[in-house]
Image 1 (tube, rainbow, N blue to C red):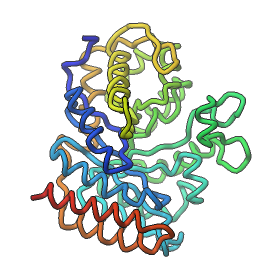
Image 2 (image 1 turned 90 degrees about the horizontal axis):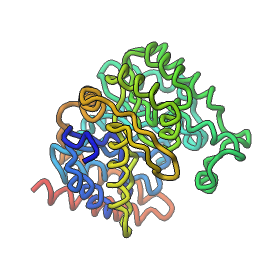
Image 3 (image 1 turned 90 degrees about the vertical axis):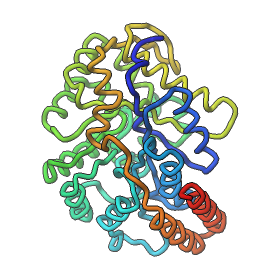
Amino acid sequence: MTGGERIPLIDSHTHCWTEQEVDVLTGVMDELKLKACMVCAICYGAGDRTISNPLALLLKLSRPGQIYASGGLFYKLPGQRKTNLDLPEQAAKLMSLGFDGIKMLQGKPTAYREIGIPMDDPIYDEYYAFLQAERIPVVFHVADPEEFWDRMKIPAHFLEMGWCYDDGTYPAKERLYGEIDDVLDRFPELRIVFAHFYFLSADMERASRFLDRRPTVSFDITPGMEMYGNFSARADQWSDFFTRYKDRLVFGTDNVCPVDEGSLAVAVEKIRYLRRFLATRDEFVFDGYKCRGLGLGADVLESIFHLNFERYFGARPRDVNVASALAYCKELAAIANRMDDGAKIASSLESIARKMSRLAG
C-alpha cells in the first residue's frame, strides 16, 4: 500500500461518451472500491453529444447511491438561437431530472469559440442568479495550460487534437480569467469547482490570492499531467499549500473509459498514481512527468478525497426522476430526428431509455 488507501475516495471528474463505456467506468469503481464518482456531461454542440445528459442519468440508475452527475447545457440544437437558449430553464430541468450539479465547458477556448458567447455576457445573468439562489454547484472548465497558446511549447499530442490557440481566433487566457472575475464580482456566492486547478499550477501565489478572494469556490486537481509536473517542481511549498487550503481542493481524474483493451487498467493506474502523489513523498515518473509526492497528512487527504466534494454535491447522489428522464430521452430523440444524420443518435436515445426502464424495474 502506498498510503491513503483506507480513506474513502470519490472521483469527482469523469466522462462517459457511449453506452458501452458504462461497464468500464463502473469497473474502475469496483477495482479500487471507490466510494462514488461523478460523471460530467458535455453537450453544448449537440450532434453525438446529444446523448450525454441521458447517458449520465443511465449511469446514476446503474449504481444508485454511488454515481453523481453534472448535466450540460445545449446551445446548438435545431431551432436554438442566442435569443432563446432559456439557460435558467435548462438548469432547472436538469435538476428536476435528478442531476447533482451543472458542468460548464464554456471557458475552454475551443468551446468558447464555438459557442460564441462571453462567459460574462448579460445573457447569462438570470442563469447565474438562479444557480446562486438555488445553491447549485458547478464544475467549470476555464482556460487551458498556458503552453496551448504557443505552438512551439504545446505538446504534440494536444497540437494534433487542435488545442493550439495562437492563431488569433481564440480568446487570450487573461481574457477568460477577466470574464470569470466579472461574473464572481456580480454573483459572489456561486458555488463553483474550477476544473484542472483553474490552470494555475504554475503560479502558486496567484492561486492563493484567488482562493482567498473567492470563498465559495474550489479547485479540482484533475490532471493534465503538466499540473503534477508543476506541483513536483515545488513539492514542499505545494504540500504546505494543499495543507493550508485542504478545504478548497477536490480529487478528480478526467478518466474517460473507451471500450478497448487496456482502458480499464489505464484508468485504474491513473488513480493509483494520483493517490500515491498526494499521500507519499515518493519520486516516480508518470505519463512522462517526473513526480515528487506531497506526503499530505490523513486529515488533508480526507478533505480532498471526499469531504470537500460532499460539501458541494451532498453526502449521497440525488435520485433520478425516472418518468421525467424517459420523457427527456423521447424529447431529445424527436429533436435528433430533425438533425442531419440524426437517426443514429435517436436510436441511441431509445436504447438508453429502454435500459433506464429495465433498471428502474
